[in-house]
Length: 170
Ligand code: S3P
Image (cartoon, rainbow, N blue to C red; front, side):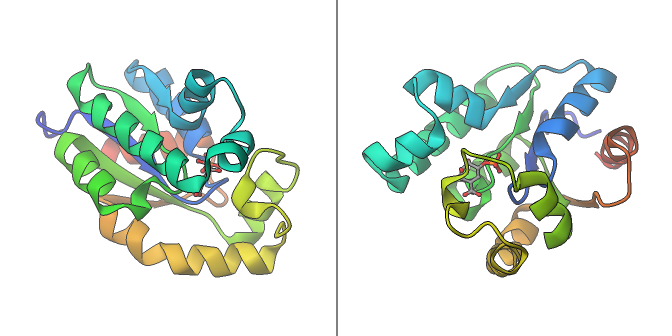
């Protein structure tokens, strides 16, 4: 592992498994996990959908950028990024500066199954279907790919297998 690259940033679409895999990597490496959405929700004292509703999406995106910029100052950390973090080039530059960027992929059907009962994903409000998920994934894919050092497909693999694959490729 390149010692300069200390953080592990997990990126990818909503429901790609970033939180689950972050915890699985933690089991193996012992690094702490930062769950970006959770951190922002806690600091703002309201769910993401409420932040979007009250202050707008741009405000939320600024919070993400501030948080990502603070993470390279501390001990090696596994960062479960919000699904939109890699859409901003300044976030990508910051992640690539401070660690390895891992893009987790899954099929639109798998993503749908994982997020269909979610109540706090404002981007999918009124669009909770495979067709929309597939469309948005395709729009975002080039940015995820350009941001990533490593791409890992998650369909049909256990979280332990995925964690091992990532660690083996760091
Ligand atoms: C978003 C993904 C969500 C959350 C917010 C916006 C996105 O995170 O940050 O609803 O733009 O893809 P998860 O990927 O953890 O669901």
